[in-house]
Length: 143
Image (cartoon, rainbow, N blue to C red; front, side):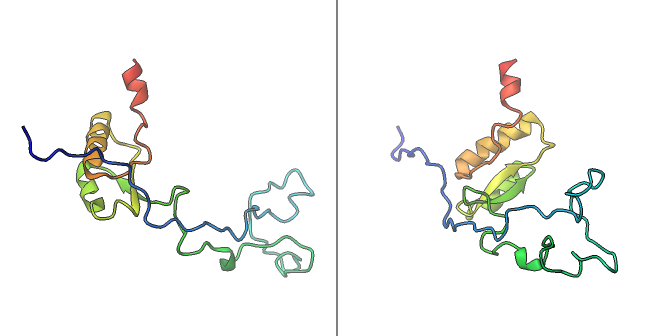
């Protein structure tokens, strides 16, 4: 029998989990979209020479600016604290070997079921979190 028994691995937790503070959560609305049904609310930059919103008059809607950007510490970070890393083959997981507490693997959308199973199996061995581990697997097993 084996001298060393391998303990079951716990799911990795992120090294740091900074609080994600948004400067603005409201959407930027298109000028006059509240006045006319024919003008949809999706953002378009006002370009008219007399446009009050473009000239930033008092009382007009705010326009998107670089100042509303996310904090670089929390940019692209998932709510669970990990950053996403797109995986297309089992070999890609080797890159996450030393970074399994910072990055979580995300399976690409165009993977076959066989390759998905191989990647998930290898991720368990390397103790790497997979964000969409159950995608496309449940429906095949139920049939």
